[in-house]
Amino acid sequence: MTTAIIGTGNISGRLAANLVAGGQDVLLAGSDLKAARTLAASLGERAVPLTVDQAIDKADVIVFAVWFDTTKQLIAQYGDALVGKVLVDPSNPIAPDGDGGFVKTIGAEESSGRLLAALAPAGAKLVKAFGTLSADTLTSASRRTPEPAVGFYAADDEAAGEAVAELIAAAGFDPVRIGGLDESIRIEVFGDLHEFGALGRAVTRDEALAAL
Ligand SMILES: NC(=O)c1ccc[n+]([C@@H]2O[C@H](COP(=O)([O-])OP(=O)(O)OC[C@H]3O[C@@H](n4cnc5c(N)ncnc54)[C@H](OP(=O)(O)O)[C@@H]3O)[C@@H](O)[C@H]2O)c1
Image (cartoon, rainbow, N blue to C red; front, side, top):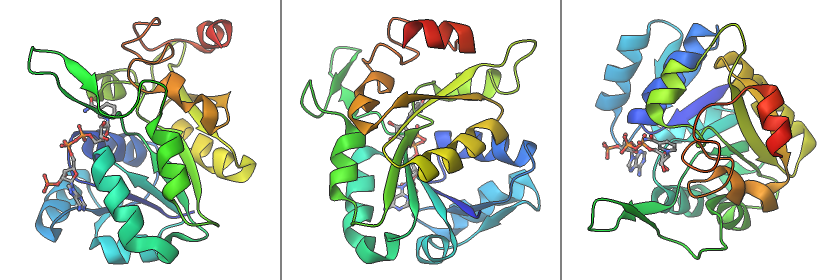
């Protein structure tokens, strides 16, 4: 399984570091090759910088570590090149509210997971994952002992979900599937299973199962 991360920002860097620490190879691509090269150089030989075209072509699993609107644009741009791939969406569709807080940029009952899945071509399988924890927690809670922290995910497709569960485990988290993509609103910001929702922190498997 070949994994690409699109984006070279906060989530990309932390997720790539977690995956490399878990023995995974990652392809990295951003809005320019220079940023991908810089990030890859900081992670060692397991991280390979490529253009977005090359990364999408080579990868089986593509993590869109970019903002929701950018993922929308990339799905439209790459269209059929995404067929047969697993698309991973960590996005939280929010923007500053001008008052020090954040506001959702899509409808209150909408989730970016479902909206993006509807835009993806038939034959591409979208999985919601890696967006439930803040970037800092993604780093600090990885490979937590004695009880690992849960990485929630939502998937309609069983095989795609299992592929992403493997990545979550390699990234140092205990994968817990919450259900299909119609549940993904629960693990997006303002959702009850998001770190900034009712749970308030990275939880253990027992705590996660009690909350489901
Ligand atoms: N930060 C968090 O704590 C957190 C937590 C959970 C989920 N998330 C979600 O994770 C996603 C990424 O967040 P982030 O904090 O990592 O954002 P970020 O640091 O701003 O990184 C976004 C990355 O996207 C790249 N990018 C923009 N347009 C692109 C394009 N057309 N092709 C390829 N790359 C492009 C940017 O490159 P340039 O800088 O060169 O434009 C940048 O490297 C968002 O959807 C966010 O909601 C973030």
